[in-house]
Each structure stands twice: as C-alpha cells, then as structure tokens.
Length: 333
Ligand SMILES: [Zn+2]
Picture 1 (cartoon, rainbow, N blue to C red):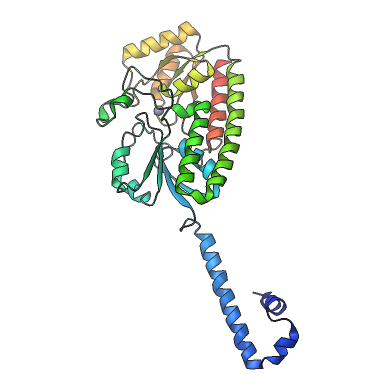
Picture 2: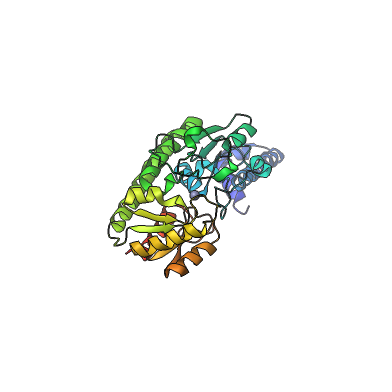
C-alpha cells in the first residue's frame, strides 16, 4: 500500500489548483472513498486470481489421462479438464463411483474415446441430467476389431458395433491429429468467444504431433525386430501405423490371466521370432510378464499407454509417446 498516495495524487487529484479549491475535510472524504474503492478492487482481483476456475474457465471432463492432456493442449488457460479414470488405474477395469460423478457435475463436455472403452459412459452421461455434450473421439476412425471382447463379461450394455472394437486409437499419432480437430470443434461450439484461440492452439499442436509422428515413423523404420509381445492389445494401432506386428499378448482380455497353453504359445512365439523383451504395463500386475520372460529367456520392459500427472517423463501425451518409443527401441533395435 506504500505507493497509494502517490498513485492518487498524480493520477486522480491533479492538477493541484483544483485540489486547492476543495475544502480540506471534503478532500479527505474523497481520498478515503477512493482508497476504499481501491482496496475492494484489489481484494476482488486477488480473490478471483486465486480461484480462476470459479466461472472463468470452461469445465470439461475427459475419460482417460491422454485424452485429458490433448484437451488441455487445445483448451489452454480457458479450459479446466477433469480426468475420470485416475492415474495408475486401467480404464478396462475401472468402475464409475458416485463420488466421481459428483466431481464432474459442472462439466459442459465429456471427451471420450468410444469403441467400447468407456463402457460406463451412458450411466455417466445420464447421471448429469443430459446437459453434458458427449464427444466420441473414435467417430470416423478406421477401427481395428478383435476376435475377443476387449472388456470381458462385465459389460452388458455395449452398442453392438463396439463389441469387438479395439479402443487404443490414441497410440497412433496420426489418429490423434484427427482427435485434436474434434476437440477444437467441440470447445469452440460451447465456448464460441474463444473459438479462434482454440483453433490456433489446435493447429500448433497438430504441427507438434506431425513432428512426433515423423520421428516415431523414422525410428521404428530402423527396427531389426518387428514383432513384439505386449501385455494387452494396446499397441495394435501403433503397430499398424509404424509397421510392427504382435507376436502375442499376455492378456487378450484385460484382467483375464492366460492359461498354461497360452503361456506355452507365447513363449514359443518369442523364441520363433527372436523377440528380445516382453512388455509389461504399469496399470497391470507384471507377475505373469515376468514368468513368461523368464521362461523365454528375455527381459521385461515397461510400456505405458496411459501416463499421468506426477509420473516423471510421462506427464503429457507427447512425452508418453516419446517414452514408449524409447522402450520399443530398447527391445527391437
Ligand atoms: Zn487398454
């Protein structure tokens, strides 16, 4: 408050001749009013900058962390993103709890992958009273279909078209570019005042993703070994985009352990194709991967399709993909 008198003297109460015509008590009253006004304004400014989400930002929800980060890259300072599946959890075994629904009750848009990943989405969207705009990022994407249902028996309420779809589209950077466009359109439709801002950030982000895609393309092109064994079928889109091939998965349906015959087949494939590592994932227990790797005489490496806040080197989508590229390089060069 030190600079208060000089501020008012110089800006508002000059020139001096006018001041000299006002009686002294009136002058004090005038100054006090202005100081009071200034203090209230300062208080309000401090209050609102400390709670920027109270009204200023557009609240949106995203099903998984990679989607939340992609939305954040586009939405920047005008969007507040809440992630539904917590870090460290697998979306395949995630269960929607009332607490989470309450947490996102203010959200205006719900960004989801679709293709059966968010098997709980109808319950979730209905619980918000139909006010929530749902954006399915896999719409229009050329989906890979599995022989087995990706989510086991837990999910009775799929659309029939989703039944055997593989939802891991975000692990193909080229597909993510199309997802960014959908995010830009959705944010602009709800928050039209910042449409240009979202478009500019979206274009800038797509250019960054382009560079990432080219790097992965170039580096995977150097791989001597093209086949890999993953924990679950998360890398099918990555493999399709970058010319790799699955030599088997440990859990074809997440949460369903392989039979002794499955293990025997995977070990046989590892030896046959000269695979150098088995990939585990932080969202699943690595025990079976370790057993298989030991039997086949190869090492266990950790791929991470999810990343998350606070996980060093995997705190945004681009870094997640760089991390995974480095792990693939360790196993396949
Ligand atoms: Zn998965």
